[in-house]
Image (cartoon, rainbow, N blue to C red; front, side):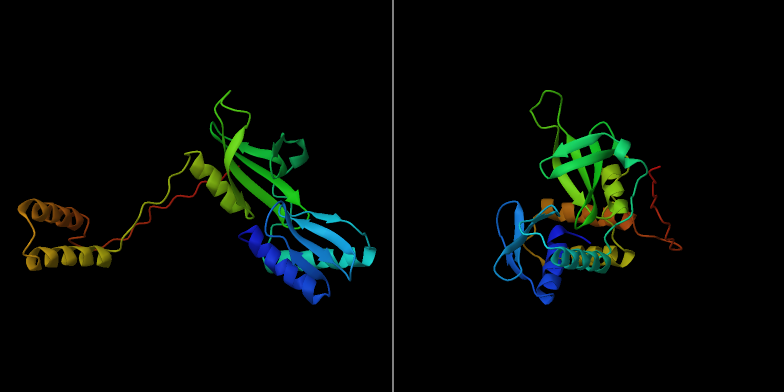
Length: 224
């Protein structure tokens, strides 16, 4: 699963096939109203909760089954990702209550279990002390624990983003394009031409001159 929107679209399709009428709500905290006939059965919130207006055990069971099928289809994380989560510090965000799993000087990783999505993970930055009433901001939501931990490591500065990489063939093509520009553009002034020549020399310094090697400079850190 990648996003809440992706989950809700699949879930609503399954509800319609089961005979429910789903009325999406474009704004606000509610994602849709669900009807079985005329009475309003329940509302679905955007953060993955079901609030029943008219409870019926059979209809509720059908909704739960549709949610389970969507979780399986989208490979949602349904097993507890961390031990003893209930003992961790609770943190309240505008989207609900979470447990604080990891913390660095500037970033936290939070986790909670939702009714629909399975386990949801959030990385967010801390506000400066006495900066304002909010403790955290710039939330990023995940539904895969590995992706969430990677975001936490990256945002904490514990690992670096992979630099933009070019293949040898791409670098040679860039040099060729620069050379053609210098040869064919008669309106280039000396300053621009010198800058292009310097750029070509810099690119060529990265090209192998002897046997080509392809070392891997990718290191994975695991959070324990």
